[in-house]
Length: 244
Image 1: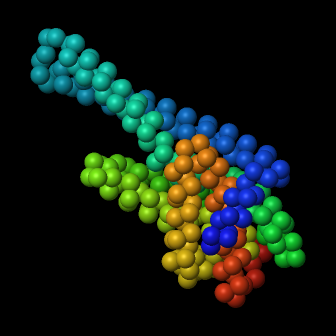
Image 2 (image 1 turned 30 degrees about the vertical axis):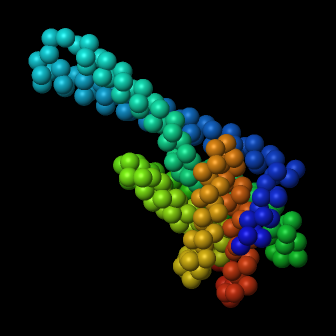
Image 3 (image 1 turned 60 degrees about the horizontal axis):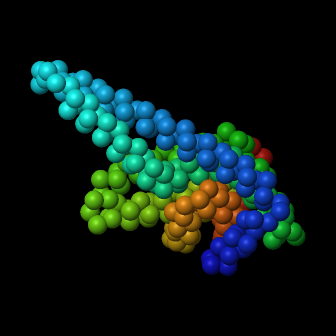
């Protein structure tokens, strides 16, 4: 497993990967900005509604305390979203991976497994479906974990292990479904779920590193291509269906 991670890291900045890396980073940054701005505007809108309600309920004549409170809330929300970018990155990179996984996987397969057949690219709708499901689950886990951050970082522990499971699951399926029908890929994942959970920890650790985490789709996909090859040697390969 460590060897697979080192191979993935060594290939990330190789010339064939650079174009994909730049596109992946660009799309990830765009999604982060859009999500952050959307969350910020939504929370500010909620704060404004709360201010209006409080003024009406308390029949207050002076509005400046409520205006000051709304301003303080907006600043706290803004800072919270900046800090929350670390927690949003698993969701963002999961979605980005669905666009570039096949390009990355194909390059890894050609480089390290030249004598073996190259996988068949997943239809974009199928890849997007997997990415969206993982992104939504990661976002939900982020919301659940935030309150627990007050308890000695317990929320960070929850988030890390949940992220390891989700990202290990998604990146493995994206790699496996290039060679197997979706149902068989999921059965293989369940058969080796313990190993893949540990593998997911590598990806979860990677995605927590600021700036470098923008390259998570490359690392996660390349890493799980190697993992799929290794696990396939332990499991009979079922011929991939012509249609999904």
